[in-house]
Amino acid sequence: MRGGDVVPVGQLEVEVLATPGHTRHHQAFLVRPREATGAGALLSGGSLLHGTVGRTDLVDDRLTHDLARAQWDSARSLGRLDPSTRLLPTHGFGSFCASTSTCTSVGDVTLADQLSTNPVLITPRESFVSDLVAGFGPIPRYYQHMAPLNRAGAGRARPRTPHQATAEEVADAVLRGAWVVDLRARTTFADGHLPGSVSVEYGTQFATYVGWLVPWEDDIVVLADSPELLEPALRDLADLGIEGVSTRVLRPDEPLEATYRRTDWAGYREPALATARRIVVDVRQRDEWDDGHLLGAFHLPVQDVELRGADLPDGELWVHCRSGYRAGIAASLLHRMGRSVVHLDDAWERVEELSIPTTRELAA
Image 1 (cartoon, rainbow, N blue to C red):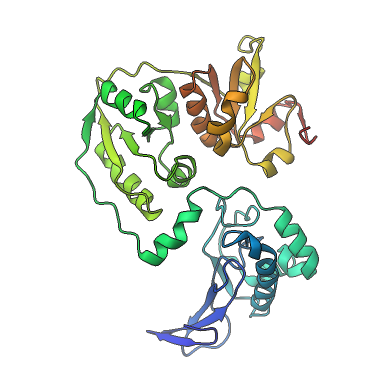
Image 2 (cartoon, helix red, strand yellow; image 1 turned 90 degrees about the vertical axis):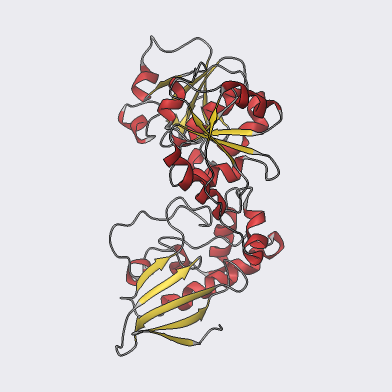
């Protein structure tokens, strides 16, 4: 299909809109009833998002600026559609395909909502391009594999009959270099887990972080406490092209001897819980850190823990993020390295509520 094509689909018609920017050949689709005039719904993909646009550095870093200019042009063309058109992008809050954090929207969002708020629709072209490119965050490791897999057509993981795991089997997997990923709730993991395993609690971000953290060529063993949890996890990994994953179900009587502490921000303030060598580790992304962080904290984004965790100073590591999810992953990785950790499992907003001092000073 090409820009300008109109395809009838039942009682609807779909107009193809060429919107290069997120990729070189990106397209959006305007959907409306065939017999009606006026507004419809815009399936904008990775072009115009809620409060931002799709990033332009994922195809080829040599094309980043040119695609950013194309993204501005495409978004401006979409902004000229009927203001009452509903805006339905592919990427939402938390997506690493977005150039900056998208807005968390409740209810229908229309183009009219974006005309006075979305930077791409109110900022001059070259200023927008400069700001856009300067604000890009890290690219998840698995992204480099997705385009070839999509062109080839990745299959879907077939459910496997889970094998009852033992601590010895998991220990052998760790010794041979496999990643042993525990799907259970991060609270449950902290209370007891198999040594050498890593906590990636199953949820909407599960596959994203497994795909980001685990080297593409490494074996993965997935642990759960029920077979029912494994099937959706395998399906989500297969959507990224990660297949051939081994699965294990922990026995109810399995000895889970490895533990570490969890607390919240109120516990952080409790003098009895503080230690002389408490080291605060902030595993959020750079833009979150720049918006405010604890005095004296060390910044170590979750995707860098494996690479740089050994460089942290001696002491008990108090690990936090924005919600507790990424901190659970990072705490388990640092604990696997032999460090004493405390998982600060709480919302970052509580820091301000409890008047815990923060700063916006840049790291040296």
